[in-house]
Image (cartoon, rainbow, N blue to C red):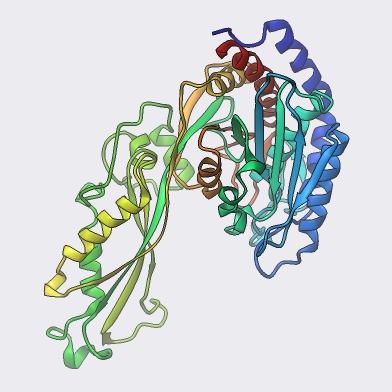
Length: 458
């Protein structure tokens, strides 16, 4: 197989992207000023404004076929664009999103969230990292080729990714719209600044509700406590069966394998998770397998009075909701069934729990031996001037699974401009301008590298 593009072509691409960066940063600031929040209760007008700005910027980049896709149940339209492939060349689908999460308590921000501020090599503002820098990286790569890249390109930029978009399940219903040989989901980034990183796996997710009923109603703890079966105590005992003393998941049938790619150091993870200094982390074994290639079970809801309003009563009813994160290569329904079976077999104080499975979504594991993977590894390494590292994502991106279902033959790649310290969904979100620059260059180089490697593989 041929290698990728030569050093001269890489240098020319790097020079071109460097020339474009001042305008791309200005355009990123313009886009970040738009409060394109898709959450319920926020005005829809900024979503349409952001949509129009993205569409106009694609046209300005030289893309002539730019349109909108409106999906039933979806407020914000999806920006769709296409550049036909040159003869004998593959097509790449580029996906990201222009909507953002709410700013939250603005008092926690150092600067107003929708007035992007450049400071110490970073741009601060809501949505600059998640995922408007990636929007501009896609547009920047197309600008670098004056709208005529060396491969075919389909652009899909949506506006409701942050709120459980109807688009998450749409692709299988219209596979031709998404037909491509490779897909780049630009909604992730580097494990740490300065380290080129390709995300190759995502854990699946499943919900389970568990409920215990012991009496017709709550009873006074002084009169009945000690013999009356307390539903909350029974539920706590049931939930305690999910982990062993070290904090590892103790449910049979849940897949866990060693993680051999890059991961955080324990110190980095403690900092990112803001773990209190004297508190140990949960589980044993490698950190990567605990957060990426192994299961996790979290109690995400528990019905009980708050400590600010306690009630001296033995509870007759208790309920909790569990979130199960699943190995990328285990079917979520299979893992969910294992958790349900484990819970149903428990008898806390002899009480039979009621267990109800909820939604389940599979994870994803990419192929590591195709021309697109090789091209991305090469392009990222060249852009960051280092060795490309492989990581996974502990959370699900439902659209990735939907795109894979729609076009199962396409190679799926996840990389982008953000990094683990970007504070996405938190106050003082930021994107490092150097990371933005390198991500734009990586995407530019990838399109050329993929064209070469595609031909070499034929």
